[in-house]
Length: 312
Image (cartoon, rainbow, N blue to C red; front, side):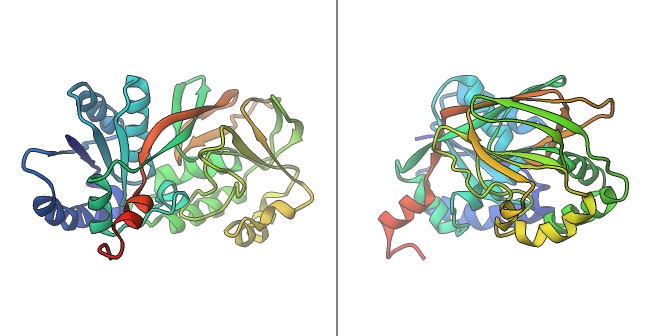
């Protein structure tokens, strides 16, 4: 067995390095010599490059140590390669919404125990194409207000935690945001009108625990959408507390449903921004679809259950 760890040293305001040092202690004592290699990312896109290289070298597992952006980059490499090494995740970023959606513990010992087993889950991924290119995503795409906030956060997030950066982004966007006229055409739902935001989820969470698409499941062969229609941007301040628990979907101007593929276009001249897993990926128009059973992920919970009561 060969395991590659890809560590983003800047994830979680440096938290990733602290957690990684703890995990290293268990690795030294738990896995045979020569089993593990470690590489550190040096900037955006580097995790994908490293993962592609390691898969070609025959590694069985590639473990992302960082946040959702790092996980997305590694997942893209594994799917693009077409081979089947399992993706491992050590949640060490600001948001960690992918790990949250899967109920992953962050105990160093539990993670190492999972690496020693064959416990995996087969999960779906989302795929998005815009004028700037295409990529796979693990959590969620946000279009409109959510995309504008992500763009704002990307410019001012340094030194801030995920929730703080997101809330600051919301406040900065609120005063000037104008609702675009958006059209959504999918295999099961058609929606058109002024839209505050459209979220397309493979998993329920974004922005460190906001349950924006509460019905999303990463293994059902579908994506779930949450359309927030003609809602004034200032009303976000009232909806946001509900969104942390997924209760915003009871609002009369919110529409939810499941889709397999959708096309989203804007009827306005202004840019409508899009993020995928918190990373800005361009503007409308966009095509989004689910890729069922696209990736194998180490199942830390299953491995932990097998090892109980020995794993704290």
